Length: 86
Image (cartoon, rainbow, N blue to C red; front, side):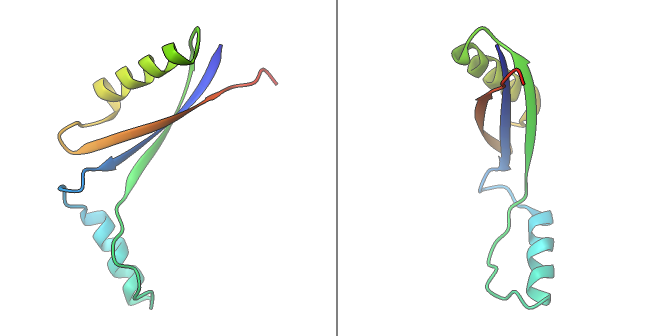
């Protein structure tokens, strides 16, 4: 079965986000004074083959923990969709 996983990675709340602060500052200077915080992250699309959704989840967890995420600084969550053969 073919699946698509979308892995969303974000910095832990305790980690400073200078890029997010730069974006926030730019928005405030453009007149969006109500913007109080912006935190940037990453969204990674992974296509994979697995026997079932449970196996797919195991694989996505493993590759996220071993390759995609720095566990000292980042957290992740993901969503999985079954890919149709169309």
